[in-house]
Length: 404
Image (cartoon, rainbow, N blue to C red; front, top):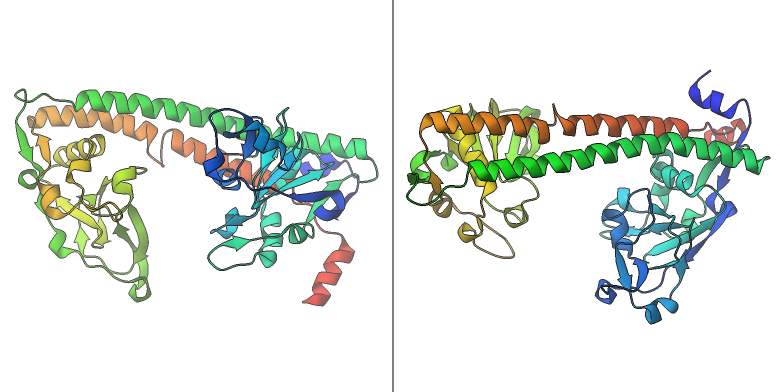
């Protein structure tokens, strides 16, 4: 007997449509330009994708009270569902509103009012079962949408439908288990943020130098530029393989052949990340590789030289060296003109040794907190899908087989 069977204790469950269990209410018109510093809470559909998790008790934005009074609102226990996105996976992203105050909800979102445990419902919206059910109902080309009428047709498993009290108890227990996993991930993420802040502090201290204290050399003097060896290949012409194919922000594909073999420092040549700095613009690679023309290729004499320059480039503001606003670019001439504090080899080795340890703890995907967070996320997804993956009744499976 598996965990789910023990939890159900041989009680029945039933697949019910969302339309049977509640009602969908379209949100009202709220633009980001309507946001105010204080006032009534509101949820904009775009924020559901980026600013909210499974549930929320506080809104990220406010609007004026008079404006809010004219709009449709979500109450505690309602689900707020974003129905529009450019990405299919983000269509029908849901957050359970659990705050004490009512909140206004924007157009391109639905308020789903129901009698189910709101977190149970929100967790279900993340499962593969839900994702597979919604796909046939998504419409549009660039902008993808799903309607309230379509959402109403999606089915959700309800344990012990004949006993509402027992049903809510089981839903609550499933939510408690899943909350345990998500809370652990939140704690680890907070710890990771603190460690990254600490890492940035020590990195900036180690790499801050005053004029006249150290010798400064241009990057063109310290490194050999191998940009002339780069060869871009369009996606349709790449032969699949196991050699990493690098672009401005890292690996973009794997190919059959290689043009580099060794240790190099890659530095982004163009792209929005040059200004946004969401990911490092300088990153080391080793072994066989293929590199396109969106990233510079630099070669150094030693490991310490390469890593020292990598750390330094990722710590400074490169805006003075970047041209273009709509299409930011760090061209070869500007790259090679960047001034680098040229320490003695032993001092570079000391700094690299310290920062390598911090980097492993904060940024490495194979060790440290990021690895732990990734493992906990996979564990959470496994148990989420297990706890919310009830088999369909034999009668329904027979109908599906006949339709196929």
